[in-house]
Every structure is written in C-alpha cells, then in structure tokens.
Amino acid sequence: MFVIFINCIVICMYDHSEERKRKNEIIEAIQNWLTIIYVLEAIIKIIADGFVWDKGTYLRNPVNVFDFIIVIASIARWSVGNVSNKRAISFFRILRTLRVFKLLAGFQKVPQLKKQIVTLGHALKGLANVAVFLIFFFILLAIVGLQLF
Image (cartoon, rainbow, N blue to C red; front, side, top):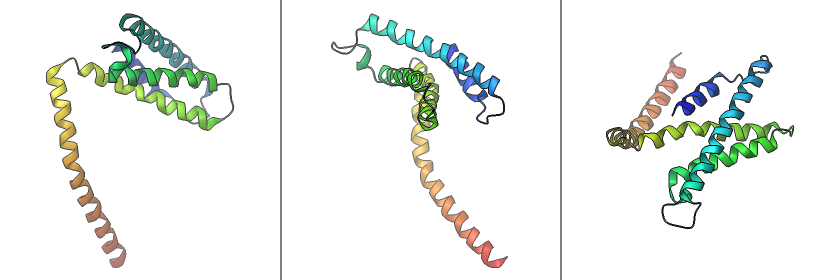
C-alpha cells in the first residue's frame, strides 16, 4: 500500500509543461523504480500462485488481471520511451495512472470498507439521474439568461 501511495504522490507531482524538465526526469526515474517494484510483485505472485492453468492461479483473480495489464503497459512504455511519438507515450502514461485503482484491491480485505464502497457505487448510480436533471436545469437557466441579458 505504501508504494501505491508514493505512486499517487509522484503522479500528482508530474509537470506536463516543458518548463521544469529536470523535475520531470526525476519523477520519471522514480516511476521507473516503482515499475520495477510492480514487476517484481507480479513475478513473485506468478511464481507463488502459478500463471493461468490451474484454479486459484494468478490470472484467475480479476484484481491480478488488472495488475498484470498495468505492469505490461508499464513495460511497453519503456519500449516506446525512446520513440519520439508523444501520443504513444502519453497513452501509456494514462494507463500508468490506473495503478491508483490498486488501492481498491486492498479494500477487498476489509469487509466493512468493502461494504461502504459497494454502497457508494450503488448511490452513484442513483445520482446519475439527479445529475442529468441538474444539467437540463442549468441549460434551461443559461438559455433564459442569454435571452434576458
């Protein structure tokens, strides 16, 4: 969990403007070390559980499938990192931010917290109707405001 929190902080510190290039290089180096940690974690889990063939193996767990996709995307970013195609690199950076969702895997181990997250998910579905109504209402008020002023 500690590594995931460090990853979240490092992702927030990344500066997308080209002004502070040295800062971004340091952040990229930290991201590379975090990727190595995630790769080692995946390798250890694969060795301990098996890969895919038996019941209860690494790729039979949806959380591990998600982790594996993120690890493969991080490794792919290294291979694309030397290419000057900025779109490809930014795509892999977007996938790298999905590491934050590994925190949800930790919440699976605490039943009370898991229940609260599931309840929050159900509540957000109900709030979608309210959001659509509010958007409609704001558009209506914006049209009235444009006509009056």
